[in-house]
Length: 232
Image (cartoon, rainbow, N blue to C red; front, side, top):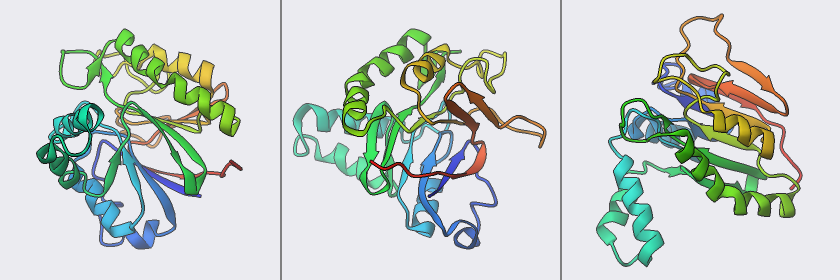
C-alpha cells in the first residue's frame, strides 16, 4: 500500500495537473501540518482518496473551527450546535482531522494516531510544553491498550508535526523536538513516526532515521511511503 504524506510546503510535484499521473496508485494521504485546508482539498478531489491530517503551528485559519466542532459533538451531540458542525463540515475539504486521536482504517488494517503542534516557544496557538504533550499521549492509552489486545499491536503510525528530540530537530526554540515522543516510541513501538516542521534545504539533509523499532521520517514537501499492510 502506498501512502502519500505532505507537510509544510505546497509541493509543486503534488500541487500540479499531473498529480493523478504521479500519485494515482496512492491509497491513503496523511497531512503533517502547516498546510492550508484548500491544499488538502485539492489533493482529495484530485486523487479521490481519504486524507487524514493534524495541524502544525502555522496555517491555523481553520484550527478553531475544528476544535469548536469537536466540543459540540462531544458535549451535546450533533443537534446542539448546527452552525459549528456545518462549519466543521464545510471547512474539512474532504479531509479528516485526527489530532489527539487514535483511529483505525478498517479497510487498510492501519492503526494511526495524530499529535499536532510544536514545542511551546512563544505561547502561540497549538504550541505545548512537554507536560502538556505527555497528557495528550496519556489520554490515548486506553485506545492503545485496546489495539494491543484486539489487533496484537498498539499502533502502526504516529503522525506528528514536530520531530522527536534529537532526531531531525534543530536547536532553536521553535524547532526543538519533543522528548515525550521518544518515550512514546519506547513504550508503544509504532512502526513509523511521520513528522513535518523541519524544512529540508539540501538533498544531503537526513530524512529517515531508525530509532529502535520505529522508523522516523521527515515528510517535508512530500514523502511516498510504501507500506506493508498488517494482517489485522
